[in-house]
Amino acid sequence: MSSSSQTDVNTGPEMQEDWTYKAEMPMLPEKYQNGFWSPAMAKHRKEYVKVMVPMLCVVVVVMWLVLPTYWGSLGEAKEHIPNLTGYLVNRDGDGALGQTMIQSFMNNTAGLGVAPHAHLTWFIVDGSTLTDEQVIQHVVDEKVWTAVVVNANATQMLINARNIGDATYNASRAITHWYNQARNENAANSYIVPYTSALLQGTLAVFNAEFTGQFLVSAVTNGTAISTAALAPVTVSQPFWYTQFNLRPFTKTVSSAMLLVGNIYITIFAFMLTIAHDGARRVIHPYLRFRSYIGLRIIAPLIIYIPISFSYAMISLPFHVTFGDKYGYAGGFFLFWLFVYMGMAALGLSLEAMITVLTPRFTPFFLLFLVIYNVSTGTIPIELQPKFYRFGYGFPIYNLSIATRTIIFNTHSQLGKNAGIILAWAAFSCITIPLFTWWMRKAEVRAHESQADAPEKHP
Image 1 (cartoon, rainbow, N blue to C red):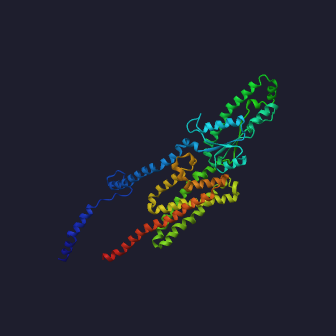
Image 2 (cartoon, rainbow, N blue to C red; image 1 turned 30 degrees about the vertical axis):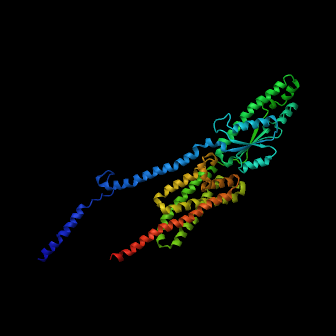
């Protein structure tokens, strides 16, 4: 009887319902045994698509939000060439060469005889207002991009050389052209030197032909003038020419890596550290007070950036980068390292702040924004870009690049301004990190308290 009763219990309705429930449960596919389109994979395929399709859409949207910014930074450079300015300094007074150069450069500024926008903007400067040293300093101090000087008494010196048959006459001393290549090698090589050289050569070719023709007409009945000029043939064949001086040569092509692409690497290294730090602090942050946690989030990255930035700076040493042009080799190197460290702090702490709200999943999208908007103003001068790109003056990579040029090439120093802007970015992140952390931690604490109270409310 007891045995029969026991059998009835084991085969009662509750056990039958349990068997029915198990029968209705979906069968999980066996691991490592299915194709992607296997029927058993239907649920997993659906989950896969639910993850990838939204991400695909986000990538496309971000692509259109970000990449046109970089394309646009380079696409209209030729339309803004007139934003590059230069001096024409006339020391020849009323001489034929000086007056011809003034008229030619004024016509060029007005766009006469050239393609639209294919010219610089020239300021005509009286030779008595600036010495050669001051003109050079204006170019070095980046008040203008270039300067052309018609040297003192250039026309009269040519006439005197013809009259006495001076065979030592040097036509290239008539005009001097100064420019600053290291200010921006792309602008100098693509626009400043080619456009100025074309203007000088075109003007002088026409003027030399006319000036020599006038001399030959006047001397056709004067055999003495012809024979004397023959002693200095250059006074007839090419009376006037020019000499170029590059005041700050872009001497090391390896420096290009430090000025733009290297700054992208700095951002990527900072991002890698941010991701690693996010994973590491998840282990410890639930047990820390808010103040200790904020200290960990700000101070730890700033310490980690020290060896990383120093290692990055040292990579340039075997390639003989000219750190010694302005502050001495050791001083230039350590100053460069300091700016790399500040730049990494500015970029890295901004990533540290944004990973709080975006999570590691979406922080790469912010990284893309950060990189593209920073490097968009780093390839060519902002003067050659639409006004929209003036935001670059306040971005870290632009200022880090300008500071690097100063240290390596002895260009005009704005190190105080550059450091101030970079540090302002880092300081702003030191404000946003606590704010974002407080906001997210508040939700975490609330969830923790709810879980702790759950057993009491529902015994």
